Amino acid sequence: MYFVVKRIMDVVVSIFGIFLFTPLFLIVAISIKLDSSGPIFFVQKRVGYKGKAFNILKFRTMVKDADGAQFFVGQVRKWEAEDNDPRVTKIGGWLRKTGVDELPQLFNVIKGDMSLVGPRPYYQPRIDADPSLKERLSIKPGCVSLAIVHGRVRLSEEEIKKYDKEYQEKQSLSLDVTILLKTIYLILSGKGF
Image (cartoon, rainbow, N blue to C red):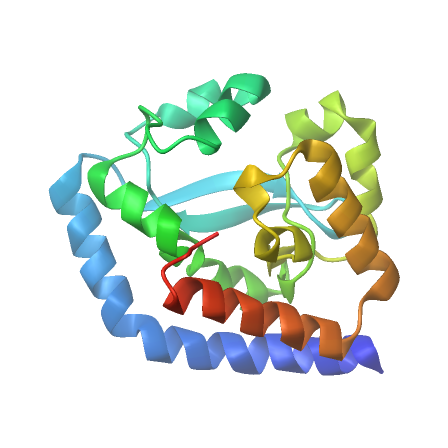
């Protein structure tokens, strides 16, 4: 029953969010085009439920072709924790801080590749490098997660895994709603995630 209600909530909230944020989507799209050359959206293959690959959708926050550095996981994690990542565009810094760059994932949720709440999806090379990440493939990945509301960028890989495992073991509608409300608070308070 939980999974049926969760799916209904995912679709209803995502459709509402897309309509609500359409003006913001347009402003962000124009800002990205004015800020740097390249596409408006960043699309990347990620691994989802039961190992099924899908294309995650985000607003582009980095200079064109910056994702070539993705395989240097240690360096990328270091940059993610810093405010001066050289790959991030001017508008991209604000998009990341506020979480607005993640809003296009509402389309991934409607499509069924993702849920609103669940462990964040990784790309295949990262999972290949750390087989323990395969545990998270037993549930749909999410736009937001328990790790995000506990400060994802400031957490170690082990802490993120701990929060993901905790979510898998305790997942419920009340936990999902709590995570969504905490995420909204982080965004509206300007604390970001």
